[in-house]
Image (tube, rainbow, N blue to C red):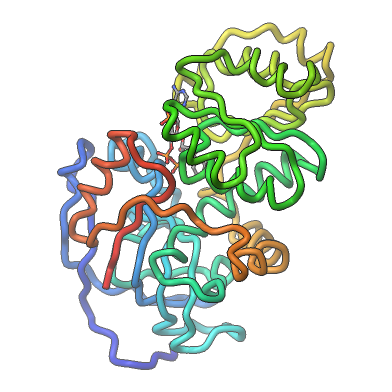
Length: 336
Ligand SMILES: NC(=O)c1ccc[n+]([C@@H]2O[C@H](COP(=O)([O-])OP(=O)(O)OC[C@H]3O[C@@H](n4cnc5c(N)ncnc54)[C@H](OP(=O)(O)O)[C@@H]3O)[C@@H](O)[C@H]2O)c1
């Protein structure tokens, strides 16, 4: 292992002391992890907070085998040490990375294929808000959903970290973007970042609104994090040959739906979860993002929508904010 500045043996990390509410997130002193072959050690400056961290804290989303038990799926920072077989990265490089866990800490061990350079001109707190949402949206909207220029994307949860990313990327790549959100303030925020139409789902039926906005055709791709009764309604809002991509089921994993719509409209209903995928799969997405999306981040044609930044030791407050559901965009931890 090659390392630059002296790396301490111990570090501060935020652990889940037991499954439960935000207050179970407690600072602990842990051993600094050692990078293995093909891995690098990052000195973390900022860590993104994501809904799956909340699920993990509650005991509903256990880390995949081999991953850290600490929460945290994305970080930005500096390369502090290199494992064997690393050619691209050097000690001191400013990077951001997707992590399979362990991001809420001063140091994290990451596979080199999940690491990307800091987008040009980005602060660490901004860069930490990028990986989890950009990897997820790229794969699900553009690869699974096959969204093309000129098509219509319907994004549910438009003001979420995922939603704001999907709106910006789809709009940047020439799609017509319709989104749903739970308040006028959230709808306004979605319109400001490029949504063509924002539907307050508490006041208006999104199926009717999507049909109106598309002259009856419906949406070509639907990114859904809701599930439950949205399954049937997505089938109704979809265009012929539409693709519905499920990335979460916050309103329920079990639903009753009229599956004849799938035949009549020739729909595809698919979905995925990012965290348990192989390092090779993540490296392939990283390479595509660097080629296609990093230039857009560098010119700020797309950029994470920042909500709040908390110190690492206040991670519980960050989770409280996320669960209150008032946030728009990304919540980030400043690790120092
Ligand atoms: N599959 C994957 O690989 C993957 C990866 C990352 C994240 N995700 C999932 O993607 C979702 C967004 O993640 P995030 O970190 O961006 O979270 P977030 O910022 O907390 O967003 C959650 C969003 O869900 C919406 N929502 C929740 N319940 C709803 C309901 N019953 N009806 C309509 N909208 C509802 C909220 O919209 P309102 O506030 O407007 O109600 C909010 O915008 C989460 O469910 C997360 O688990 C999946």
